[in-house]
Length: 436
Image 1 (tube, one colour):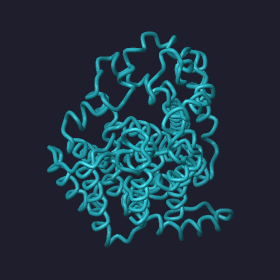
Image 2: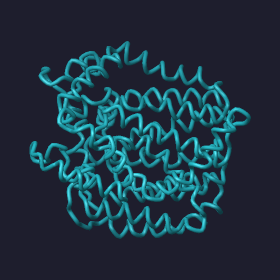
Image 3: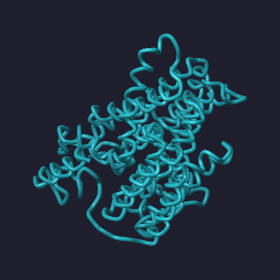
Image 4: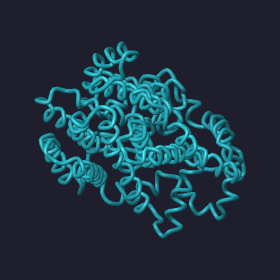
């Protein structure tokens, strides 16, 4: 809390250096991409009701069968995300949110021929190029825009359908994380993490941003890898291939998702198996071959993006501030319960590392390793300098893997910590108008 308050105060001081309407940080309410606007909306009663129900959810999570629990968690996460999005109303909170802020939708009509689009994509990234792509289109591989082009082509065009897609896929990450935790750490810890995954304040940005969709794809890639590595499925090779296909697609959705290799390595380390690797690589190579054959080379796109990145807001946003303010923003994304859980994970992590040569970590030790991998991904993205601001949405794919740390908190305090998670999300969504 102190870190976030410090980032907010220092951010306001730094922002007095005028550089446009939002100061040198290019943020309306640093360290978040948001504006101060206390309000309520049609989603307010629903959000309070969902929060109240999930606060008393741990006992339900213990009783339900696993096959019922996983879809129930997904459904609860969708209800929580939808209700938070509707606090801003159907138009501003859902249907118009991606139309006004997501430049992919503004560029859908510019894609007439997919082959020509992929061949020329890199030529329209830099400022000064003819037909320059908007910032978010240029800042991602073409898979991101192609997703919304595909939705448009099958008759699901516009902001409302895009929001439905992002929320549905994004909220599914709760189920994916549960599947992963069960495979690597045991069912008991997965059940204890269920309510913390549902009531994560990250839902504020999952509904609605394309990064929620990216996080969902990435989470299922990891879940399938965990199933394949631990052989918790009847078809481990097919699961490994599916993990590779989703991982490859994730890399063509966002350049930053390449750091998922850290989490993938942690999964294989915990499972003590590299047998899925050939099938995972095959799945990734399918997308590499397809995009390269069509005319888009990933490395060219990335190196050109780095140049474009520093042609925009990054050239004025101070690295010295965002190096730590990015982490302060994550306090609101993962919530105070996760921060407390991270402290609880330190001991099991130390013991797991010390004994790793003799035996693979299990239970709390395995969960601590998984959570540490999520934290490491955020730190790598942070020091890279390619994530200055807006990390409350950009880092969703990494931050969600710290959420299971809530399972390490004493069970008798779970309801109190869940209430704190819900209250934080409600305060953010009712006091601020978030940019996503």
